[in-house]
Length: 288
Image (cartoon, rainbow, N blue to C red; front, side, top):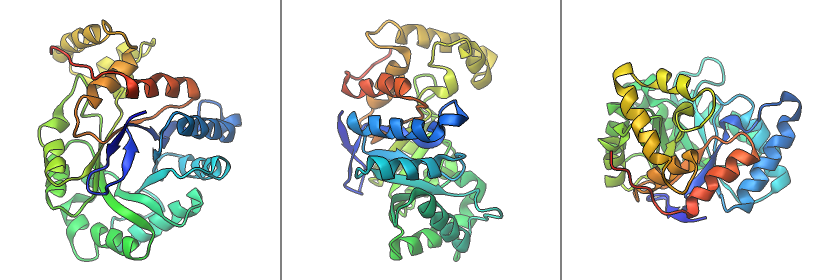
């Protein structure tokens, strides 16, 4: 495993980290065991950063149980949003959401508390007095989180929020991988200019970079018909290297030194073992 600086937090985080959306696995009868095995294996392979959210089903509860068993000093990032019912991105909702997450995770403090889907909040509800930012600052003052961040697709608002200098980290998903570089246009430069930690999620593009029966469906879902030939061309080039397709996707993103960590939504040890190996491989450059 290699480690990178998480921006101005000055934390050194594993270049491949664990995203908590699918730690429950594919069998509802063994969710707890799956989460424990996955978290344990992540630590064994050098991972020290886990990202989760209230929106991710049972993720926070399962991770809380797993962290009790594994008992290692992970950096934990969660998000505020969606839960509890009636969440409105205002100060009180932010604090209530974070306190709920801390209870499920079984910790007194998380490393990073992030605004989930900043686009749903909008600039005003984040920045206004009594808004989400004020709630996050109060959470810091109360010792509920060390740092604060923002998450969303690579929309103009995410770059604008990064430019305020108020946030320590940014998580962007679906918009930075070999077939889509939208985040590199504004979000990543704005975050880097403000010395933010940069987390890139959904590196496999919703199944585009996984050779399964659903790959064709994923390409059709995420790309317009006129763009699909180029997508398949990029995939073909990625397969020429000495790594699997998922590993190549991680290697390509990690070729950008501005990226602090790539978050893997692995659902089992086999998936994790495959992608974590990319952390120790050379960066991948593509001609397209």
